[in-house]
Image (cartoon, rainbow, N blue to C red; front, side, top):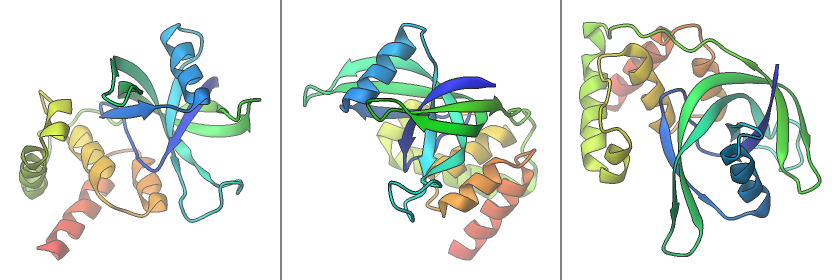
Length: 192
């Protein structure tokens, strides 16, 4: 079990995922400061937008421990950070500190193993390549994409696709990327 500070967002990240964040609330500036000083790691946690902010299920149980890769001062003077996903974690207990920073006890979950993508998922590769080309800011986050790695491919799709948070959580907690790729392939074929 490991104690992690939580950065709750509507967004979602998995291992090897990358994301840029704007940090402005005092509690999150403290979170970044503590993580940078090696005092306490943090995880990006997905929120459930369908319940009130005070609801016990507001923060969903699967989170991803992240590391800070880069800092920048944004044009508006705020702190910008780029984070990278390290490992999936299961939140077992959660509380808030005096400044309302969420903190949790977590258990690590094994990351999906690197496996080759089956030929049947080639449309998912092509669509993700197209998506990254259409959005330069997103494309910059992945200078060396791993399209042929099933875990990487499934993770990037889960991060990007608009999907009910509970379903994202369910698919991301599977023991392998296969159920996720099957669901994504079915979804993609219905969109065509």
